[in-house]
Image (tube, rainbow, N blue to C red; front, side):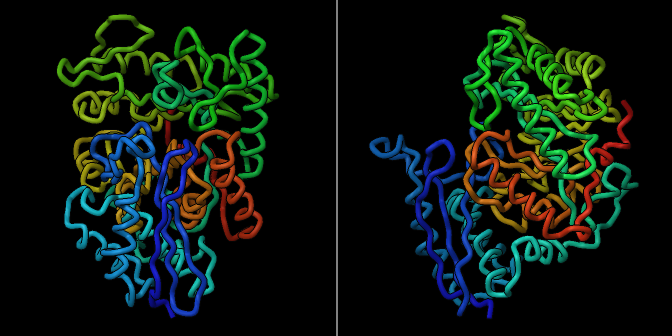
Length: 452
């Protein structure tokens, strides 16, 4: 029986010590399913609305008791008696109940917690593991209809597979007190032949990077929100050079074994009025979109960069077209703030030849169904999907199960030094062991269509 008997939410805390929503749902004669909602610091303005209390006398106004109350009252009243196994019907019901285009009435945090807890509750009632349940839910979105030749994504979306990890090594921007302009400097173990080997390489490089930073008199211990080191460096390119040195000291070859990824998060140094970018590294200079693209192209020539996220701002569509024309056949260009896991914005990008990849964040859009719709749209139009955590994370491991279940191919979680991040990485180790030959690992071969 997958009929919902009970719905209950509570206020818990995320990795930054901020309140967030946890929802438990129980089907008849089954154990409860539970989900916790993450929260971002670097948020795009087109994201679904996270409902906060706004009471300055409690938890800096960040309490979520209003969202919790919405789950325990309106949402619970509508969901009790409904079939948890029909995920799309449940999510549609939640959207209709909220009635706003951005989930601002009930709160995207209330709605997402309920949506995911429903999936976990149905898994408990059906005696399924979470990854099997998510795979069954994803199956309802298959087969994928190829809207164009699927070169980049031909290995993705069809079956269970372990993801290529994209891992934060050095943090800047809003994740580390703006010590650097760019938000994340990441590594991708493109040469690894298994998920376990990929993770071992990452951990080795991470610890070696800490030693390297200390050797040069930089802080190799303090970390940002996502566990990446947060040193005060003289410039953005210094971060890449230290990472490359750490890779080599780890006995690995930059480019062949380990590639570099950037999360530029450029919206946060973009002036919409003047349509210019302002980097601390370049002083008072006002940079055009083309100037920023020149820098990114220069770095792509100089360094083994395979992925660039939010290279331009969320409303700089013309600049994004130029960026895609110049670098789109060489590297993965990820839209995060640009697309916010929203199928309508992604469709706009597809029609305008903007980007070639999309970051998939559940809480940007607010339901499991809408998340999978964006993922399906991306794959059908040959956009690499990257399932991602948020900077304010929890012990919830949903995205680890989801990335394997959908065969999305890549996972961006953060670094390897904090338990809310390791919870996901460790869950993937369990899944690799449990699924064995039933789950493939394609690793860096998913980038074989990019021309370096």
